[in-house]
Image 1: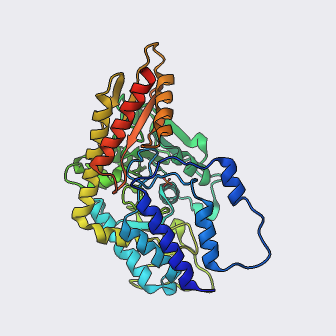
Image 2: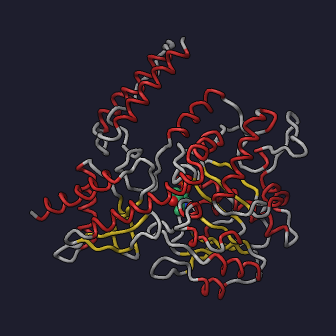
Image 3: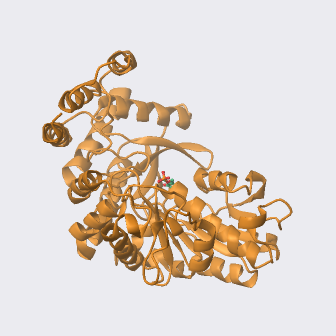
Length: 462
Ligand SMILES: *Cc1c(COP(=O)(O)O)cnc(C)c1O
């Protein structure tokens, strides 16, 4: 078996794919039946040469990959992958280091520490905060809320790691009706339960009503969960006010900043993050706006001791690094894991502060241009102009059934294969969501996307 032959084949298929992104259809071209026939096969008895496996794999998925890594894809929240991050990710697999403890890979433990410090710096977070590299924002929430659970209960004389939750003071999570679902799943994972979540109203533009939160806060253990970049509108909550409320009630404020935390990296959007540095924990993604390959999220905690107590673990077969040494296992929920810091480090190095700021600004500009361009077409209503890199629109029907019309237009746009937007619900109406997260998106992609929507509307009404 030739390792190099297999890697050469992978390089060939990867570059061929990446070069096709500019021109290929955004939609899949193979049917479910075709893909199943090719991929859902019996596992054979005999071994195969690695290069043959790679070739057949690349052929097998053909037509079944969504072009979400391309520059004309504006749905969900899917970033691209920066070239340096992709290349570094390959290296990380080649090195195959276990990034769980320092002793397994001193270089990569140091690299993660450096990268964590860079991230706090570019995101405007306190240098004293602890951090962890996790699989995504979902697990960042779990990690942050585990630290919150530890501290809120320890402050009230309860050791949750030892005693569990049965009989413990009941923790309440105060959040907005527009919170991301991943917050709810974190509450489930941590044994807090969905009944612990109290949903409060949000303003018409999506901000959590902190008066309502204040009115229902008591001195029981409470977590307030805010948003930096609400999922549809990109709106920001009032961080300073929430931090003050939590201080008064010995609570904890966590922020879901999967996308919006990156506004801190640009002078144009940094003001949105005012007061964010006062919070207790922060969750964000690496695979969205930082344009890392899946799967990387980051969590930061203002109370390192609580963070560590909630995550740390020891076994007879490894020892702690000691003074000045950071063992990754102390800060995240995993045991063995890949070195997510490698692509993150490479992405930040390749961008530099300036490049990161330009990436953030460029995505915001493109989002504004798309919303304005589509918004100027007949029968289109701009529901929310971008605050950062996302906005929402809807399509108006002559018969007044705007929801049906909006879904119909979205389906037609997707079917054309030029560009891809997704649908969402906003305040009881169907909307089309525009979000720009990919370093590849250029002005031409923006123009092509708007033109494709124009054609769809013309075809529908013509
Ligand atoms: C994507 C997203 C999440 C979940 O993050 P994952 O990286 O998919 O785990 C949470 N909150 C918001 C606002 C998101 O956009």
